[in-house]
Image (cartoon, rainbow, N blue to C red):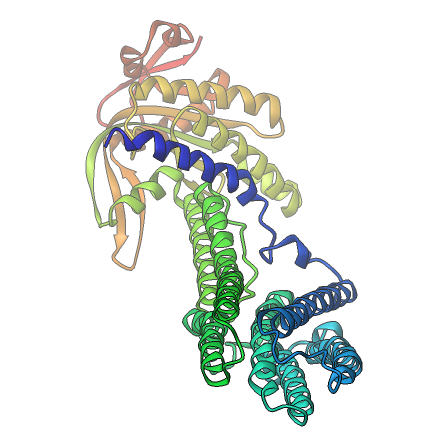
Length: 533
């Protein structure tokens, strides 16, 4: 096991060198930079598609013609296509037909493909018929190419056979074999080139059913035409050699060898194309998943594949949409009930009831709220209260508490529930001082009383099964509210229960001074006050 590790490490390094992570992040929207971007204009896209199709059709068919000539002249030298009685077919008819086929294949076939996607060029919403034409376009191009190669095979075979019937198997093999392989490769490449248009067509719904649907059908078709047909050509060559007896053993062996090489090369090429067509959508989804794992929920994939891979892309978009919606609800929920309460609700199923906790409470109330409302326009009052609340929320959050509720122009903040704190009293007193200071500086138009108390409360969900809220109930809440009323008439407008000072640090205690002992309204026991020093 140890001996294999260096080799495994080297393979991993090679893999990373070939497909580095940075390249995954740069994967284009359609899987290849050749296809451009989603934001590209339709005119530019039409030119791009036409150029891609024309170039590939020309190159692929030129290679096919070259292979056909090689088969006719080198692999099967007899009967000789340059014989005196057939030389005019080889030098005049064959080149003329090749030129004709190129013109038809390039001009008519590619233009027909463009006509099938005319709706996209005109920027129309695709109909079901438009969608059907888009996904049938590769098959249409393939049928045209197969027809041209087939017509060429019939024409040339007939002309040569009029002079010598031994030309028949040679011509049929030499023309049909490369024609089928070339047409299949053009089908796959056309499907690739039309990805941007297919992405728009898929907006009309699910793609139409095809003879060989899905990845399995695409793969089997490629195997049949990329490997099966060439192997059939090898078998036909053997039959041809046995029945005609025109090839020497050496010529036959050479012919079979070269045909087998062609079969391997072209079969591998077509399988590589179909593998790439399959892998590129998966690579795009993988890259998008990496971004989602990093917290980026803005990712939306372009659905451009009509197979199961398109369903995978569509499923990813649905998943991300659900995550975005969940995050939006979570954020909204957190704004209403507090981040801590929201997190607690996500971790466990909320239930009615509560638990005893040691907590501190700050109660804040505006002084002269009635006069404020009657003396200012409503819009101005709302803006003023929002500034007022913003200060309170900011300082409560900074000191690890949570704003439990807003009641008109009053605020109830809790420290120690639902999240426990190391020094509940210290955090609450520090937050109260900071709020009082900032309100004086940042919201001078308002004055507010602040009351702070601590003790045992019951914290939990109160209400009904259909509608409840998280809150705290207990004597400290009532005490903080009464201290808030009292604070409106003391210097600094801040009053706390002096008992809280026993639980805080010396530095925090130095900010406070002991005040009078009073019996607060509704309270049975007297409370000694602590005010700002």
